[in-house]
Length: 183
Image (cartoon, rainbow, N blue to C red; front, side):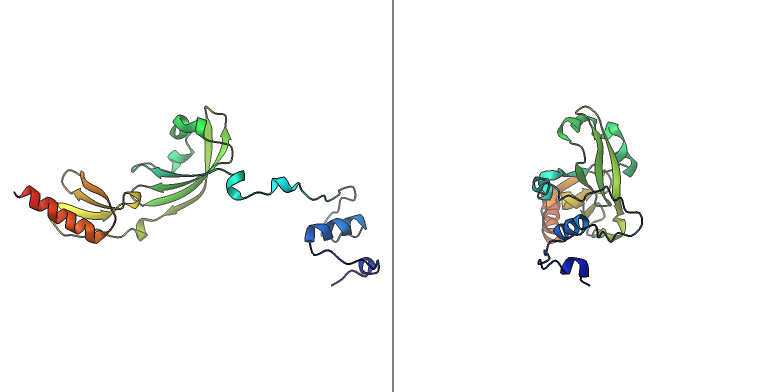
């Protein structure tokens, strides 16, 4: 696979593909397919432009409130109150509080007062959501995404307890709650 024109120069080929491309281009032996611009010189980029991902692109996470529609993420009104904290090309990982959806959005415009976003990935997780336990006719124990395990009153929809780390602990806390109510 070596190029006889380059190998005959008695110089060792560089291991770096960018340097190799630069050397081939200087020798006038570009092997690109399609049209070749003979006036185009391939130059290495400035090393300061290559940085860890977090230095170049701001990455954020958002717990999306329950009831928010996916198309709301592309509405500037949804982001208006935090526009000053955002930057162009910021990527935000959005996870619905109930664990039903996950999305990634990218900021396509930001001026400190207004911002627009585009959804680059959207996943429906409803099928992956664990089912709650039927332990009591009036209460549910469910896993609710970032809220972890929750105890919810079925009739009112009120959360009795949130942020319970395990299902077993939620069962114990429901038992304690019902005991307290019956005193």
